[in-house]
Image (tube, rainbow, N blue to C red; front, side):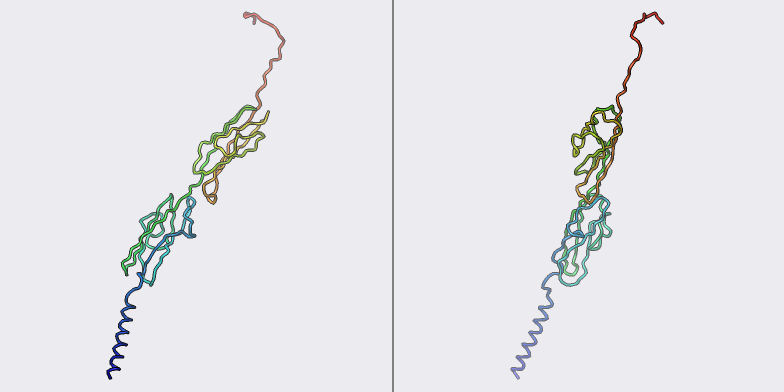
Length: 221
């Protein structure tokens, strides 16, 4: 009888011990968070583009988490884990994630860089006499990582990758010459922008007086 009682006690305390062990959470539900873009490492976007954000969560269990992004007009929703961002300029997005069951709060942030589209203005057209140099002077160059000039003339440019090159026309070149000015952004996927300017070459006027040599007095009419 004593042995049975001892055996029963052992089993009873073993059950209590197991209940106690399994009632204690081995890990908090929320362990870490990290904001990423979708696709990942795509935190440079073109002007006017959108980028989905997502929160990678290291967690156990299945409790509901609370998401709170900093109030931003550039997010589709500030209370979900995967909002859509449409920033008009480079923006830092911050989020706070709370596990209400274990009272855990974690924060993270990500910077989304906006690449603006190039803006170029090649400048005004001009009219020159043959053999005169044409100085290319753009009126506006913005958001360009690199630039390039091209033309359809017979002459040569002093440089096609500089902002203010000089055009040397071929000897006696006349007519219209078009110059295309192109600006490229830091991200090739954002596209380029082009503008053109023209110069009109005219031959120098030739003047001659076909009269016989002679002289007259001031009072002669």
